Image (cartoon, rainbow, N blue to C red; front, side):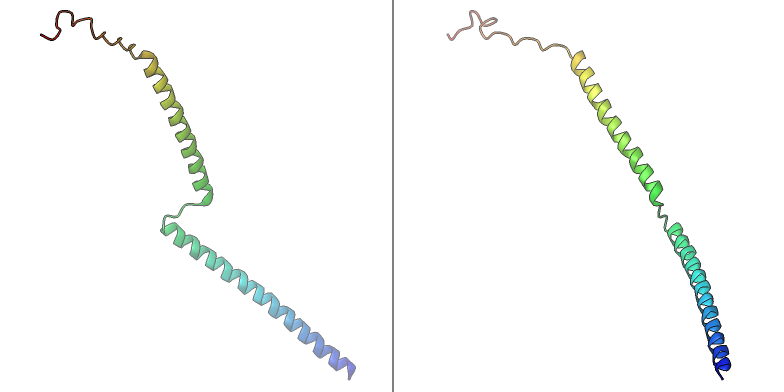
Length: 101
């Protein structure tokens, strides 16, 4: 009788192992199908990948820094090229003889 019980237990263990393997395979299939569906939806929605976003962000930061540096250069050049301000005429220089009458 012990031999029959061992065979029954062995068969139940084998069935449980097979069922677990089938469940894992089904889980992998469902995950793969869900992943491809989500990727398709994101692609249709024009959502960018994180790596692409980070790359463009770095490019934009560099461009903004370059613009700031060029602005500073232009301002320095304009300040250097601006004609010196003429001194303001003295109040009494051209007004001689034009006093109150």
